[in-house]
Image (cartoon, rainbow, N blue to C red; front, side, top):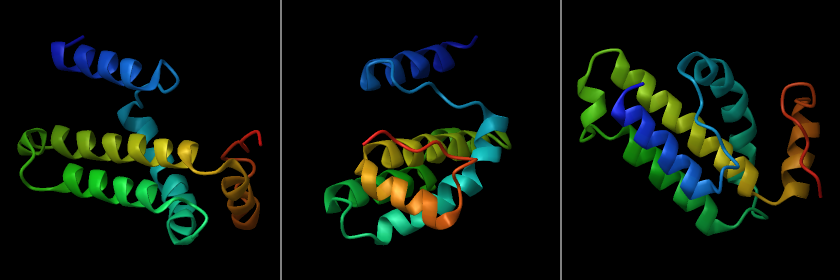
Length: 119
């Protein structure tokens, strides 16, 4: 395992207290449509704190900015960006109020793809 990958795993583990594991590239591609489908109505919901919505938008903009070194590497750069966006969206969904997330999961019919959060 490369040093960058090891450092990334350690940083994610420390930052989240071991609650979130880094997402693999293929898994990220598979999860992205579902996460986007759930994250969009959560962004529009006023019950989700404004600071949380703003933080996620800022992080996604930073990840997708052209001033990012990993994007200079063909193919790998795009996978890195997608993987990071998936990680940020998963954090957003896990940090949003559980009752709001569960309500949107039911409204979108995603019960089989996204587990409901305990309230």
